[in-house]
Length: 352
Ligand SMILES: [Zn+2]
Image (tube, rainbow, N blue to C red):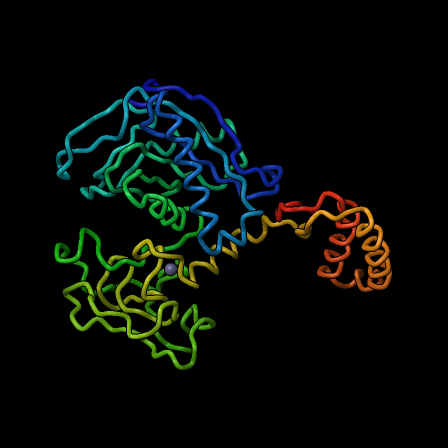
């Protein structure tokens, strides 16, 4: 099983916001797709990209990201599905040897990640994050050094969740390991403060690591689990999107807290405010200093008038540009508008 069970086809840049050296480069790799199924993989990649950029905060960080689709074919379709986890026992011959049921947990879907990295490194050495889409409709994924996802219903959110781990160092916010009602050793968390930004043992308003996002009126802890032998089933006592400290996170029922009632890292809803701010911190350095404004095309007369007006504004502001990046960008934007007045601009990732 492995590299002899298929073929590297090649890389296509499907979102191009500039040279790889300047952007955050996301690589989407196929696994368990036969050659004639790679057209589905292309669709899946496109689907994921659209989903990612419609999810805050990725919608506002689009210009920071390049996406590459890496086509690798496999001899057979799917992934290993060991009978030990209640699977079919299938062992298809696939390039990266994907398998469910790692550590006895069926949803844990792993691939030969060293081989994935080698293959990607040979083509796009500037990569930052790899997501492997595995051609199986069984629910699963994993977020080690690279993220994996199957194509079970709702898989686009699994992929985002796993990226949350691999690219942004976010912890799982759900409060079980094998499952609620199944776990017997997940009552109380006894470790130290986790390094991940989105789980904590600290419910002190003055020291909790996401304290800047907690309103003075929000109680801390915001929820407490009344029965630590069980997953907490209580409804949220506060409005959606309230940041506080909700008990139950990172595979434990008690003594560890998450920032919002729901999150992509808990139940595949949306990234909570704390997770969003980590994603912003990571991707913002890959944004350019200034972007071109979006504007309609104009006729020659309007352009003549606008050119005169903009030139006067530029002359008036020029001195302040020495001191302010914002004004520098604004002036560059006006120059761009003069130059492209007749054409207009609808691409918000055009760099100045
Ligand atoms: Zn979160």
